[in-house]
Length: 298
Image (cartoon, helix red, strand yellow):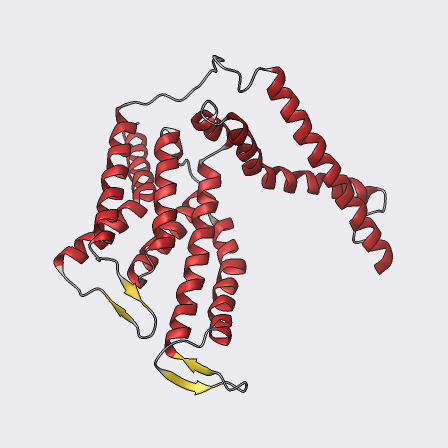
């Protein structure tokens, strides 16, 4: 991480509930204002967590994905009342399908960005702490899945470097030999992943994981700071749900584009939605200012 993330230091219950709400809201409320708020907050937090790497990832992968998804939707979706022209296949190209393609792409990018933040904050030990006693088997499987991708990537780099030293990397030899080397590396990685999963399961079983009455050491304590953050997340989430039930976030794209009328209630609900999404960035900025103030006094 490029910064010391203050939000990661909160109780795991706060982080899990927060990400569950923001990701659910990003999938349910698809008005342009809600999507823009959620996407901006997700990108800001991702950049705060990963710095230049997040910016590079968003430009190299998320932006092309956004453009591709926005362009591919009108080719298959022909609904809408505003016909712009006709495709060579004879199907109409509508304004509504183009707008919905952009919205669908924004939803996809937003969910991926939020999940990248989730995987960085909600580590496997936090997940086991929350669900280890309630659903021990599923909790172990999910925690192993969350840490699988980064560990697989690190191990792949080690195996590739080792194979390169003996001339068996995918960059050595002819095309056929490169394919054989790639298959060999893939076979090694699959074997490592399976053995690692079995060893982890045996290790947890030998320690009595999941047995009734088993106690576990935990470094997490729920204090006043966590209570305030949890209260804000719960109240803001309840307000967003109430606003959604009242139609404050209503928006449709077919057959015509139409949304909820602007009013003080809808504006206040949009501000609450944005405040919920911006909570981690706000806490980090507040913490950074506090540390800078302390450093300036020393």
